[in-house]
Length: 104
Image 1 (cartoon, rainbow, N blue to C red):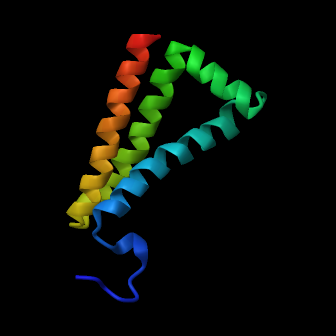
Image 2 (image 1 turned 135 degrees about the vertical axis):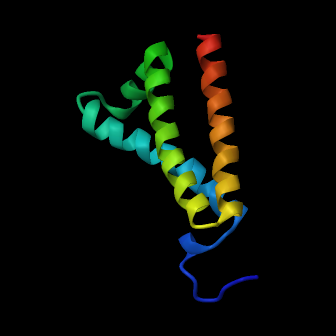
């Protein structure tokens, strides 16, 4: 049932979970770039990320931390559809990180 006037982050929606599950790792990637790799321009940073195997693990782990925090919040507030969307994206990212490390 739709709740009119409800703030969108408080809704229980799988699409919201998918969106948040994608947005959180991107924000984590941006924050780490701004605080840790500020000396590189963004294209050099992405090239470094794609070429260094240890950085794939580093960023993958921090992206999981962001999604775990969201997943825990939405599970504890009993918004299980949103948590399910976050979980699905986290699994896809995890598989991508493992495949990326295997191919490198």
